[in-house]
Structures are given as structure tokens and as C-alpha cells.
Image 1: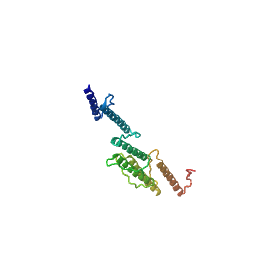
Image 2: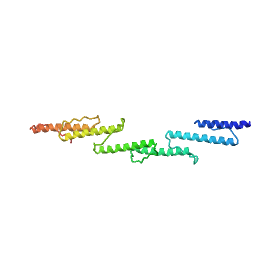
Image 3: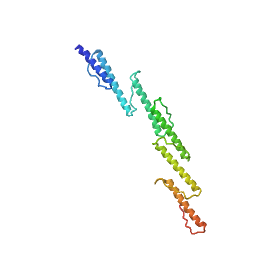
Image 4: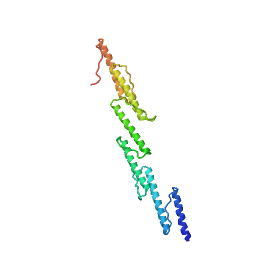
Length: 231
């Protein structure tokens, strides 16, 4: 019985420690022991409880829950300190990416280490958005000489800007022709909602009609029908 009282707790302790070392976190030890064996049981149970808490915490973090409570158990608790630092850093990243999503490109971003691929990617994104914003501003003021380059085959935003600039250049060239009196210019609406080119075509048609009637009057035809187009 005395030998069993020694070997039993040791076997249980060895089994639990072996399982924990392999990532298999068991339930707490419920058997009753005496003396030093009871202290060993208590310590193993505390370890099991801590590992369950750490696992639950990391599971919540993996799901994006940044309101998780990180309890540092001692000054030497490097694991929980690391988790706490990760939560703080992730909250900061989340706040800054939210600001970017709302259009704030003035935020200050810096990598935390040479291997900080996440912040490198976010910084690259913000730099690209700043560049696109600056070029879009120039386009909006009529500058069609903006240098636009596709960043990849899937760069739909830059492709749309390139198309817009190309179309605006074409419209500018044709309006120059109109300004010089060339009414042979042809403009095709790009879609059913292309109000600009619809209006341009209406204007060209009106100018053609006015020109034709003016020619008639110039040769003495005073029976030309002239009607107001608006109030």
C-alpha cells in the first residue's frame, strides 16, 4: 500500500506531463493525495488551468476578439506578456486600417521589425492610395498629362483611371476641333448613362442646323424656319 501510494501519484504525474508536452491538455487531477504529492497535484492542476486559459485566449484572438482579457501571472510570464503585446499591436493596426478605410491617408505607419510583413503591406497600400489620390486630384483639375501605370494585371482602379484619362483626352481633342469650326466631329456615347457625350452630340447637331440655316440666309433665303430651342 505504501509503495502504491508513491508509485500511483508519480505515474499520474508522469502521464499528465507527457500529455501536456504533446499539446494534449487533460482535465484536472481529481484524485486525493497527501503531502508533497498533493502539492505536485496542485501545481499540475494550476498548469492545466493556465493552459486552458491561454488556449481560450488565443482562440478568441484568432477570431478577431481584441477585447480579451490578458492576465500576466508573474514578472516572468513571457507567454502572456507576448500575447498582451500582440493584442496592443493588433488593436493599433485595426484602428489605423479603419482610419484608412474612412479615407484618412495622413496616418503615421511604421514597421515593428524587419519581418513585419503585415505593416509593410499596409504601408505599401497607403502609399499607393496616396499616389492615386494625388493623381486623381490632378485629373479633376483638368490635368490629363498624369503618368498612370498599371501596378499589376488585376489593378482595376488604375485601369479605370487610365480609361477615364484616355476618354477625356479624346473629348478634349474633339472639342478643340469644334472650337475651330469642324462640325464633322463624331462623338459616340459610351453608355446609356453617358450624359456628357449625349449633351455634346446634341450641341453638335444644333450647331450643324444653325450653320445650315445661316448658309441659307447668306444666299438670300429668308423663308428659313427658325425656332427658339428654350425659353
